[in-house]
Image 1: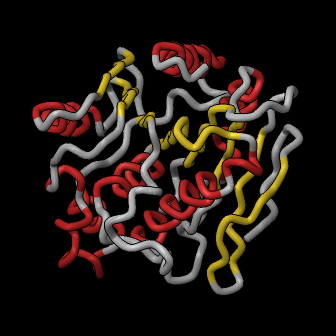
Image 2 (image 1 turned 30 degrees about the vertical axis):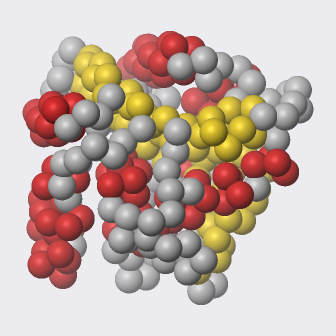
Length: 262
């Protein structure tokens, strides 16, 4: 995999090695080093393509939240550029990243009970799936009943929740397993407190509304914030003169303030 370029200084830590592939945490440190800081892990979208987006997608959000005292991390995980890639590998990597941060919380100076995970699009699918599907796991030292991989808080930007649709379009070899890889077909109470952000003209908007309604009926605490007339990926830095980058960043900040994370 090519070297990922960031516009800001970052520290790098390997959280997992798969064959000859080092999976990296790209860490944005607050200026003041303190103990028990909150931490946010970003999982980029566009990762199922052969030419995927990189963890740098969220670097501007990460830089901002590090300025607010959070340790902010852009997470590298297996994706469409990896030979033989399938989505369960990325779901496993989400679990591994959260576990690594929690296990190394003292070294990182973070509070293991203030872990926020944020995922967009494919990154949202794998983060939600990592919480919902306990049997998908490749960390041999953890059994399926372990909860070390579950973040304390979750933020999702418009993510496909229909695993049958995802596998039919991209991974037909997984169609027979698609129901067990599909959040919308496995609704249950399992998510931490969640902020969900979606544009009203996003192709996933109606599906996301349906999933959230069903999940709330099961007792999940999910706040849906919609943005009128906006399509998929509208919040990314560099789009729409950054108007919606700033607006969605503000929604994230309000959410984290309301939870006394920052």
